[in-house]
Image (cartoon, rainbow, N blue to C red; front, side, top):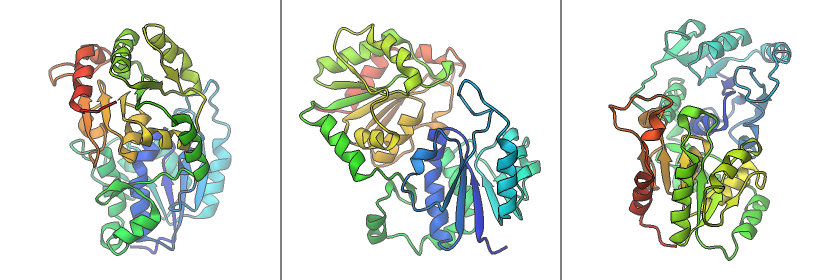
Length: 350
């Protein structure tokens, strides 16, 4: 096995995918403390790595087939390829299983290219690792870095004292790593001052097969207000209309967080909230990272593979039974009482 002095991590997809990769980055840094670790990410996710000491270099690359913006472009890809090839990386680790990601990684050049042993992409790798659909994607990502010898080395660095200094958020040997600054947290403290316990509702997902009906969201939100909770709707600037659609069905007051907080500020806010009820999206994974009680509404994706990562926080998945097809109609199976009953099981007091 070669001496890996320069490693490129390939993670250009959405914010939730990057967050789910931070435990692997943490483990890799512990195994190779002197290595130069670079990571390729989309511009929409780069802010999540602010202050993260596991990464030496962030390379921003918006792959057009992952860009949700109005005018995705292929034009910047050639300079990025040239830049990365000139760095002569010892190894590339690709956490995606898609064929396009494999093809792009193959163009970047490296002595070793590591990826998952999936038929559509295994041709691009010099080394493969099994991908199990029976385990969480976080555990698959950990398997990928452990194949490089991480498992034997990381135990030398893990301990209560080190974790305290590190400030990592996580469980067992899985450490979700995000680093809000003091300024971020003080902004959140001011917003939450003298506030009743808040529940975040993540009503947007970017995909129709993950979405739930606005009037059902509104009924759940009204119930929580009547129970004494403050309702906060989370969403990106482009999702304000969806949030307004829910609010228009409500009988009580609620608040939209659209455009109010940065990504790391939102992490600090979520940590202070009583709970989150959310679709299968980034906030669901962020709640696991900061240990906020979670109710996740899932339809299209497997909760075993993509649900809230199990840890030291209560989480309940509301999803159709196995006999219901997992298509764009699956979310309609979830009824208002399913979600309210799940919230009641958390036994939270306002």
